[in-house]
Length: 96
Image (cartoon, rainbow, N blue to C red; front, side, top):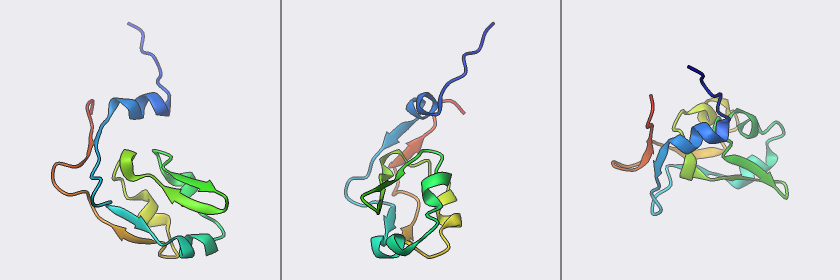
């Protein structure tokens, strides 16, 4: 038996995401994020959902694994809202 090692993108593709278009569960204060020098969220998110474009931190909550890592490393309180998605929304792990 051989086991194929999957890339992070392939592993994330296995998960199922039910996106709540009306109410994001994570909201950033972009002014606070703009003044953050280290921007650890860009490096710690396992789903790579934080991106930097034209000096502005952007977040796409549609693929969020709900791990809370971003909330833990954000020492400047740039994440002004972090909750789990409303019922029936969010990530569903298919294998494990």
